[in-house]
Image 1 (cartoon, one colour):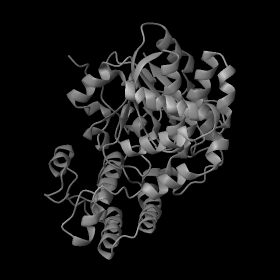
Image 2 (image 1 turned 90 degrees about the vertical axis):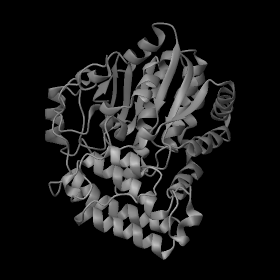
Image 3 (image 1 turned 180 degrees about the vertical axis):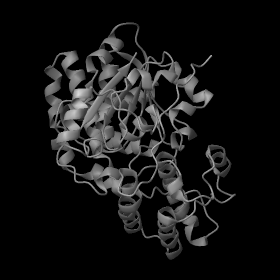
Length: 397
């Protein structure tokens, strides 16, 4: 029997005006749609659909997917009474997820009755932005530290790679639509740091499968893959499943195609980086590195509503790692949490499933922060929850 879930705090809504969620819909999405229009040579009807979506989402009523959409029935099942009502009345997580699904509809990603859009089936609207990040020659320099890790002891190497995975989350292309990422070094110690507990869990018993629920492709995924390589090389994981999105989602969210591109970029890098990339290709051929996906990864719901098949698959893992801000919002619930709430309490609905959350804070939700730290941050940096300067490494075993 699944454990009973404790009541969640109220969900975060798009309003009130001036809130982070309101800003996403009224400022970030405006720039995002402009970037999407500029990225590929879309037709006039596609551009009009994108602009119409933006207008609808700001001050209109939420329309349904067309009946012919391949996932129209699924979205009806995921609806919680939001269709036909103003967007502003929907929870932030639900509305933001549906906004990104509607972008795919506007450009004809799944096909369209519009003859101009038929050639765009399966074309990732964010591919030019993702590809530009991977093509950056500065990536070789940015990851040059990896060579020095060959001489480090296993615990130190693991901590360094875990930190790189966390900091890579700052590279989120959605976040960079409106924010400037100053650097990728730790700006302050993590608000919660369970690195040692995660390592103790991995080394404290028989190794097994590790599941990584991916977030962003590109720079973040490079760091994640290096961590995965280490887990397999040390024998701390017998195999690793990378759970990716079935379709393009929040701009830079990882799809199977993105894993391929990122692994190719990694094995073309010099020194130990290239060696790690080549070995990961071998792991894939050997069945020790697998790509997995599920429609629920592109749903507007929190993980409290994990479907039975996906929950059973994750429950068989020795550790499930949730990467990034969106996965964190879905893991604990995109709600008005007291930030001092224990992480264990927020994810107790998962029963005895060992989970780790690696995340840079870029939205209002956070739990597991000591009260004195919360009070100090509220006084010194009122935007600490959303400005990408804080991180958490949290574990529940």
